[in-house]
Image (cartoon, rainbow, N blue to C red; front, top):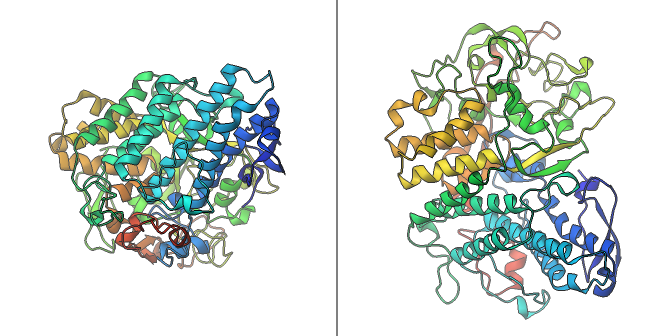
Length: 618
């Protein structure tokens, strides 16, 4: 889908940009090709050049990337997603490739930094000019961090502006540690010695600030400490021509300490917090309302938890989530049985499915202390829907994040404020949103509701401005927790404080109460924090990279992916489901090979640069 937010600035010598909306600095469009003196002639033209550098961020629209499309959390029926999930891609046909995109963005960022001082317009004051420089340096470091997340070690151009068409680009990749060191130095200098604001608000919201710099520093250091990049023997033979290994050969425990301190620095600043909404009446008055609190993270603009976000107003996400019978494209993000299995039980706070009896995840292993039942029915009220219904026991008594995030068989599409769009969802074969009704159907028998906006209307279309998280404060808290566990410092009081802050906001009891047997066991705590992250950040694109940096994707991302039996036939209009719908059913069989932990560098780039070494097994 294309929108005014997704237009990219094509920059040959340099392009002057105009702003097409007064409330988003990223609404830019190509104008003409001019000399540097013309581009930086006025305050307005210089500001537009800055916005052009920012615009490449929108090329990583969160819901057009594999981060959210191609994980075991969801099934998405689009052709490119299917190709990626089935492993039908190569270095010559890279799905979701961003190698060239990010290097174009880096080149434009450096061009801006080298030319912004040419602006003679007195309206561009010294202070504003220096802030813009700091912002663009931060954006450039962000692009490098994104490149490294996808490709591992990259070529660091720093402040160089090489000739991309000549032999000047015949250069080797820097090592992983060199890349991390440079990004660390850039972010640290920007945090400590630049005019970047502490936070961005109002018309500068979502522009770079110290909080964003600290958050991405914390993320890249956590990635660097993780098994994928910290002594991973599989990458030992990926070397430059002179024999220099591109990846660290030995494990360095101190990298976890660097990651922990980076997270702690942002936490101590006190500029962000978890969104918490309190009950205003009833027996729980004054206590956290976990349902409204968690939902508000994704529906409340410029909230205190959002560190960096994607601003959307074209309704793409809501259209994909709205049922086809309402005029939507229902089936855009179909939660899998695997993510349903991941959510904890409310009463015990324990994760009910501890594993599976075979590699294809057909039969779950159930924690007997979780309070979970797999089969049968109960009368149950999903508090998000607010109506008592006959409910399959698999869905009874789960934690609030589950009900905020997923619609299952036997309930309505409850999210819209528009009464006529609150319909009972029939996701079985001959139902109003089953496979017989449209190719736009819920392929797993589930729909994702976590990111749906109540104000959106599918027919006639009424789009809603909203934010989608790139990075939020809960991630920083759980980054600290993970790093502390990996350091083996299990008595660190902040470990429980930060972990329980996330769990308590979600309506769950403290982790030490739910799992007293795990408190002195590093392996058990590691497993639990992995589970917590998967649930807290479900459908946000975090699990895609978590499963890679933990080197667990060969277990979780390949093989049979499951849902419910949507081929079961029911009786439309009766607000009931056929019993054979509630069967774990294979949706597709996915491929994940050891090479998939990193994206391949495009073969075309390898062909142009004889010194560029390809990634593992590509």
